[in-house]
Amino acid sequence: MLEFTKTKKDDVLAYAPFFAEQRTHVSDFSLCFQFMWHKYFAPDYAIVEDCLVLKELYAGRYYFHYPLSRTGDAGAQLRAVAALEEYCRDAEIRLHFTNVPREFVPELVLRYGQDVSVTNIRRWRDYLYTAESFRTYAGGKYSGQRNHVNKFKKNYPDWQFRVYDAADEGALLSFLHEYDAAQRAKGSYLASEEMDEVYELVPVIGRFGLLCGYLTAGGKIVACSIGERCGDMIVVHVEKALRAYEGAYPMIAQQFALAFAGEGIEYLNRMDDAGDGGLRKSKLQYLPCEIVGKYNVSPRRAIDGVAHLPTIRTGRLTLRPVADEDAAVYARLAGDVGRNRWWGYDWREDAPKDAGGAPAPEEDWFLAFARSLFKEKMEMPLGIYAENGLVGEVVLHRFGYRAEAEIGVRLLPEYEGNGYAAEAVAAYAEHAFIKLELERVEAKHYKENARSGNMLLRAGMRRSGEDETYIYYYKTPAM
Image 1 (cartoon, rainbow, N blue to C red):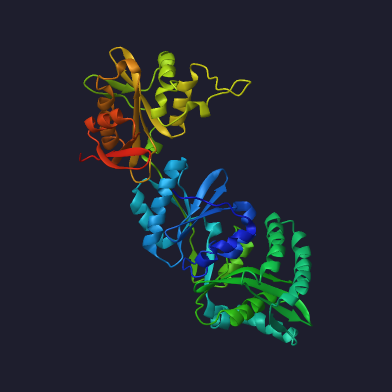
Image 2: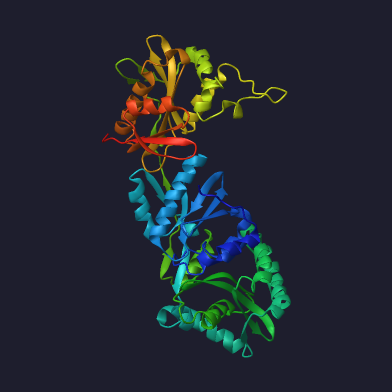
């Protein structure tokens, strides 16, 4: 099973081997981004199939960054996707992908069929430029930038561009504080938050292997830029200049490119605009070669579109939602601790507790809890009704993202031995194939519960494997 590890800010160095050669052109896959915005996203990480998977909690929902292969192996990334699907089934977490590069969106849409949501929020798209355009500012389309650079050089003939050294830390921080004083006066919350992170970034420039340079005029730092090489691009995370020095911004941008965007660097990623109109205009004026999409892909499971539980009739049985008047019988079925050891779930974990901490549910709690699980789209429970009324329950649960689900059944002891369980499983599986359009129904039982295995075989299922605890079965529409 996929296991995620919690991280602190400095732990992002564990991601370095995956970010160093990435070719997604997505700025989120970089050390600086993960370091600077850690307190907002605080992702856990896992490594599977030699791919990095980041898991973050945002606005009450889990998002999984599209798996990033250390070597660019697209096949390994798809195997990591499969591991994520199983992880979400087991952990009962909804699967939402984020930062999916454009080239992998069609693969996911085809994987999950038409019932999938795809979004690409404009304010978070990255601006990608050719490195050559910043090195030269060539042609009429960059005449404005050239004019600003020439004016800066004319006004400050003693200008210098220097590559940052650890000994420059104090001077660089002094510059940033001067810049910051003007920015905070504007009252921009996001800008203030960013500056707080920039201050923390400066001391780790060397340890993270970042690229940093600064521009001086009259011996004073008037602009700086901090970036990071990721494959064939440099992500420019920080670019600050004192507005009083006209032309400092295009000047620092060009000098940074000249200093660092050499052999093997084709692109500069200058991040997103966060929905700021002025920043968007500025970034567009530098003529990006691509505005890099960061796609969110959210597949839906078969249960997600079910508004009401069905009624299914067989030769002897009716499978339907348990009625209010059967709450007491249902409580006897669901609350039998001894028999429900085979069910694989102990209701006492979720039941209300008394003053001493012991489980103390009211009789109708069991039915209310089952209904809540359907409302939350966790499972589809149906009562099994025979001539004598409610005799058991059959449940579809563990809905997956490749048109699969697991089935389980339990009966009141006095109704066992009549073939009701196999009949209910076969009928519900058929409903799942035709009405829910599932491609696979799965089941399992504890090894020591051989009777369940015989029942599943009578229901038309086939054995698919075993482990130390369970024996597994499956059924498809063709069977």
